[in-house]
Length: 77
Image 1 (cartoon, one colour):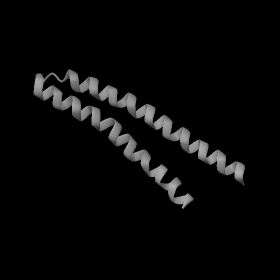
Image 2 (cartoon, helix red, strand yellow):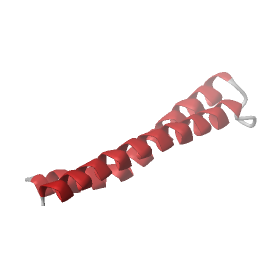
Image 3 (tube, one colour):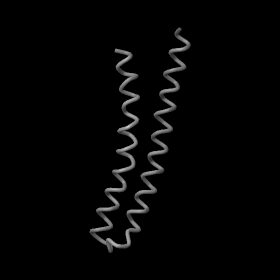
Image 4 (cartoon, one colour):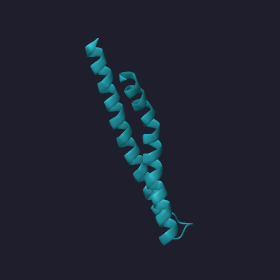
């Protein structure tokens, strides 16, 4: 059971990256096409950079959590 939890944590990195990058970009694209000129997509660019920042923070958090788990396993052995 413990191996399954650690495996799911590794698999969650991909979903974290895709979700935290695509969600703000998709919302910004929708707002850009709804309220602005779709040829000048400033809201999309802002949303994309916001998504990149959120992706970095989430990835840093997940990697930190994985490192804590690895260190805890080393102490147990």
